[in-house]
Image 1 (cartoon, rainbow, N blue to C red):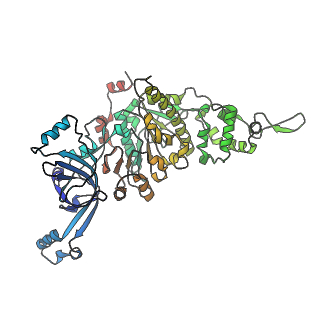
Image 2: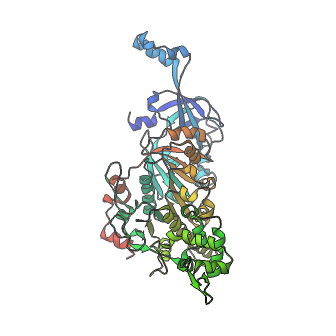
Image 3: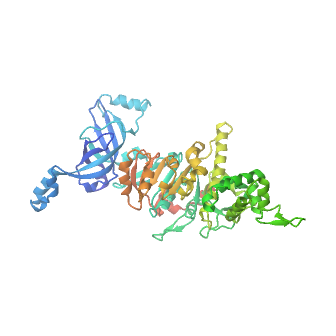
Length: 576
């Protein structure tokens, strides 16, 4: 059946249901033509004076039924002629749909009916605001049910031609485009979830490409596995996968961690080095698990800060010598003045605890990207670039340990939080005419930073809870959403999820959503690749879609001929 016929054809009619349960509809077409997750409309053409309403919903279940169980049990095809068997089936066997109601839209009196002109005039005058609202009533019995047409999809999810609407995928039955509104998307933190191998990184690239093209916010990607900047090869198909830098050129700056960093044999735009003075005691406490720190660590760190200041404690502690002693004139050996033990005795700290912490911090002391004083304050450059409208991919290069990821991401994000709070307060005080540029921070392996034990210590948790009022939000990518702290999950406005095999992960993604029991089955039935469920703030209603492919067709549709930019475009991007 072609799309045009499918869009205009009624597939059933309402036979029951209610607001606290799904609507039930009797199917009038073969069940093979309707899938779980189908987006349907229910037309309620009431008498002319009462007006016309549309109800929007999702098919959450398809059930076979019979007027008498015997007709379902017996194979009448073998007993009767085919024509008679077909007639008997039509009278005794049926298929019902369970429809999760989501939205309703008032269309007003029908053309030519009393009240029609007044209704239209109220819309034009702005007196009546006609837009989809949550379902608050039910359609009458026998209201026709139809598969949503292109206009219905655009009504709810936005017109692909309108600025800020980004096509994330298409409906599974009719292949109609479904948009997310990027302006709303960046206003609250979001999440992309899916089991390993479901294509999270490809989906993330698609979303990031849309945000960069839209260019109303800056994007900072913490690229733990060096996937997003430069060309890569897909692990399953071995085909070339273009990077964001490859396609967007100077709009995207690639930052490598440490001096002389190489990212997939490419030289980054600049390298990030961290000054010893930038490392604070709370950054070290965040690494308790990775460094196997003891319960005495906070007390020792506080003493170090009190002795040498927030900017000097790390460098001074690194230069101390454990177990170094000198001999007094009396021939007695005592701790050398530059030893760990001498400082501990002076600060009132147990020498064993101080010595133990110095040993535990050895991996940090040996990190090449932590230097006494970088030639250039690259942390400041990163922040200024983001505030100025650039997009940054921070690739960790050869530093792929959790220790590096936790330290660098938290440290940089803390600096960003301080800067965006300052910019926002300056704007709100009237000293600046323009508000800060919105910023989306992209975090892979989010459960390592936002689990129950770590969330309270990281800046990311603060951003998820509070920073949207300062124009900073998160985009977290993870395969185990159940390990992310509940309070953080509750702050995620938009959730884009692929197939999840673990019941706890499914529960975590659907927490706080209406109709989650019906959506749970829909999520478990997604194809392992290229099918996703859209949920939350940006989406007026949940919807399963077939996601776009991350291929040359995508880039041609997004930025033109194979993503190639003209000389004039390149000069414009560089500010000339």
